[in-house]
Image: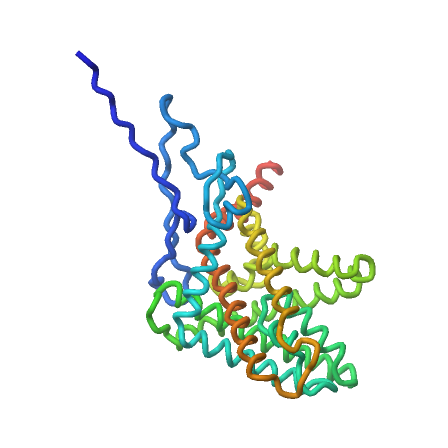
Length: 351
């Protein structure tokens, strides 16, 4: 009599969006949403394949599209295409976010056009006005250096005002993005979003000042030795280590130093998708700045075509910020665990 073969249970597949859904609305206003922890996997039996855990993508294109490879190292980061899609959906479905994005481009253009001998910012700078730091930080330094010949006190005052304005904009953006990701399709509570943004204004100001300081050092030291290559390397390093800092400052309600520490740990979560995301964003931004209509001529008033193109690129910038916000909640537990592990290791080494 033939023996009945036992049916083997198939291992649960790894979801293409990182394995964890975006959490719903938090119970307490302003608090970080709960993140579902992945269930523990049973050890592989002798007849099962050992590679039941999600494997590292086999190539860069696998990281982009969420395909799995055969490597042994586990990738804990969501695919780049999924992150972009979530970011575009979060911003595009929120009329308040769209309106704030368009008003931010117009407001920064008016502010910068009133500073300097040139009556308006160039179209090439117009598409970079609301880019992520340190991209917009280098742009601000360029405008400050080429602007009107004034005293040092006035330059410092304008610089401080610009930092405060950018900190306020980023705080409101991230706060509205959090509401959009938690409740897709629903109108965000503007009052609670503004309160959350106000609480994170001081840490966000510290983050903007940190980017301004690092960018100044890069322009003074790195460019003299490496030129354009040094600037690009500095942009990649700044985006790689500190791209999560603005999101963490608002979502976790922590200070500047803590946000920077968590951002570094989040960047080092296993998986190549983070590097792929920032290099794709940086390459796309630089390419768009080059092909912007009328980049060689700075008119007093940009044309309709330039304005439409600048607003479209501004939407992309804010969508990338939303992509980083979405990714943070998927790798949040890993980054927090990595930060908490260091003091324990020090205690063990000292004991």
